[in-house]
Structure formats: C-alpha cells, structure tokens
Image 1: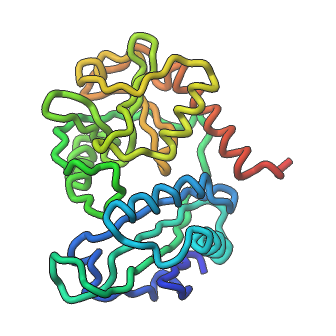
Image 2: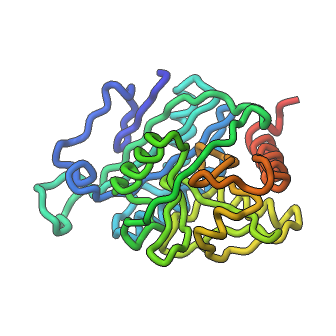
Length: 288
C-alpha cells in the first residue's frame, strides 16, 4: 500500500478514501492540518508537530477525536504500511459533517484524516539549488499562527511566484515588514545577525524554524527574533527559507536583489549541515 490513508479509525488505500460532501472542511475551510516529514521510515520531530496540531485545533475550538498518543501510533502504522522510507504524512482535522451553516453544529463528530506520500531522498547539500523569490503584500487574515486549511491567499501568491520563475513569494505587511513565505519562514543575515520575524499571530511558527533557531544558538551565531523590512531583506548578506518539506533552502535573489554572500552563504551552509545532523540523529542513529 504505497499511499495508505486513515479516516476516523479505518485504514484504506488513498485512492479509496472518501469524505462527506457536507464535511465542513470541504465546504467552509473549517479545519486545521499538519505535515510531518519522514526520513528513513521515521517521522521527524513528530511530537513537536502534534503539539502544534493540538494548539491549532484548540484555537478554532475543535476537540481532537483521539489523543496525540493514538495519532502518533497511527502515523507510525501509516509509514509502515507505505513501504517507502522517505516521504510525508499529511493530517487534517475538520469540525465534521453537518448541514451547511456558518454556526457550529450543536452536535457533530470531528473528522480526522491522515495519509502518506513518498518523496525523493534528501539531496546532498551541494545539490541543493539556490533559487529566486519575489515579495508580495501580505493580504491574509491575522491568525497566521493557526495552521488552517484556509490557504487561498497563499495559493494565489505561490502561483504568482511560480509564473515569475521563483520558488517562493515572501509576504510583507502594509508598513513594509517582512513576515513569512507562502509555505516557509524567512531568515536573513543583517549586519552579522540572523534575523527572523518573531512568533506572533502574523506567522506560522514553523517546526523547522524552531530547529534552526536552536542550531544557531548551538553555533553561537548572533540571532534575533525581531521583524525587519523589505529594504533590509534585499540588502541582507544571506537569505534562506525553512519549512518541513523545503528544509533549509538558500535564496540567490529576492526581487532580483542578490545577497552579499553567494548562496548558500557561510552561515546558511553551517545551518544546513547541522540540520542534516539532526536528521541523522533522529532518524538514522542506528545506521552504521
């Protein structure tokens, strides 16, 4: 079963998985989601992802239909059933299926869905291609810290980036403050200090972001979770993106402006190496 799925307690092949047409996630975007990377058949930082999933669910007032321990066991079973070593597990929680109404249904069972997909193995650091990014106004809602299924502004922005030949669109608020990418967090080396937007309601607190912040402290690299502007971003010494699927991805230009250091810059390369070390420690510790 290369693409296994699980819906409310039942395993099946992804091609056979079905939800109700009146599921509130489908009709109203009334749900949250999470993506967990799998390396060597092992989920990477699963507990951190499940904690964020639980917080997102709580923020929109949906109770998990089972505890995180049971979800963790299901994730492991999905990976085992898949037969692949490298991939991801997607999970989505909605308020459930009910007659379409903006008000919460008085009594409805939340719907929890999970499935797995295979990904290519991680390329060598030197094979990671630095890419371009563009910037766009951040027109999303003010609860970006919730990993909501309402992603239309992100989709439109990422499509615009792709049509411009860029890997990502980086959002900025009306006052010019850089927030995050459509599917990533943004780091920039500015005057020798690594900067990234603080974990407020304006960004999603990425798991990879947290790992990178920990790595930077471990390396004793100056780091500050303080907002910065568009001009600072375009004049930065180094710029990189982080996410579960992108990992640590260096940028060679933003709106055509190139960082002072050729990508990946010295700090980014160190972070990439240390991040690969975390993967090895978590998922390959018994491989000789």
